[in-house]
Image (cartoon, rainbow over all chains, first blue to last red; front, side, top):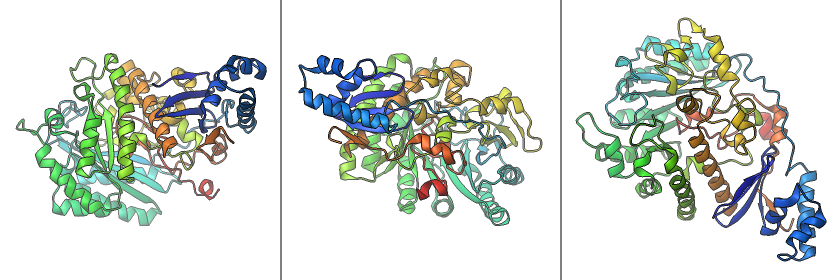
Length: 453
Length: 51
């Protein structure tokens, strides 16, 4: 059973046979004995003698004293019950852009039921990006990137392989820009895999820092959601291609990424399916969609999903004993070399340092907002001209969102996804409650996994 | 410490000293594309990582 509580400065929970105490503001994570866990319950409200009296039937007095002193020591070192951080969040005041989601194809060769891009066209015209627009987008990125050296471009769609010649030319163009401007492009691609062939796989392998391959786990699950244009399932076509692609990758990054919906709340079985195929870097994301869809994730599903994440964390630990390189994106937390407090406060940077560019050259805060006219920031011709909108995105962070201020998970999720917030609560300042619950559970699972390794 | 094992070796507050250089990867670009997990990103600040 998982118990937790939140006194504003710490969060404690029991999961996977570990008592864990998280100090919110220092980011410290402590694995503690039950006696410490029990003392911490009273620590802020009672003095030592009162606590010793409360716990005398369960523990020896001397043990309570020793455990209490250990907590005190951590408190003195600022590693437990630490005070709020006073971060000066003058975030991105130079308005640097360093990451771009490049929509090279607003068209798709699958028609997935849940597609937020409306089967590839984002509720607009089916269109491929021409080379000239693509080059302008990379020029814009370089010009807007100030002193940042690492620039990211994700080739996205629709399905980017439907416009592969342009992808290739843009990579070549980016390499020229790198030399000229002392930049480093990290190219990535997000694809459904249908058009992968020997030639493009070789090119992708050599030129992309990461490749995200979409597949929804088990054949029945995948084929219900991810249909070809002839209404057939895509699983049998795609799985062999994904396997081929991954074989080429060797040590290079890739993710097999799935979406789960209320139709497969037992998604741990889909993750096991990945494992059985030999896919080692995996991600499984909750669907983002209107609540009236029959496959939407609603409040009534949350309890099942919480249990499923816990169940998967146990399965995951066992699978990692056999295969230590098996990684689930949301169970990975870097406790020592992770991001700084500013990054952890502002999150993805959408609308500010991260933008999406459409085949027409329109600029949006991120791929999830593409096609929403009121979220248009500008075009490649005009640059970013909706300054007010940019400022709204820049100022949406864990210190400004009411529900984040007192949340124990704020420095892990960094305020959550703006698009989730907007599509559920009509405001990027109001995080999507169901997403928050799922994210918190994933963090608890991740920390309990680390505590066991 | 007999009763407590600390998994972290860095205090998040100390990172404010060199914070916000912006060289690290954009979280949404890495794998999820729909939800944020920033905790698993790497810090790419050279000075910070010398410590």
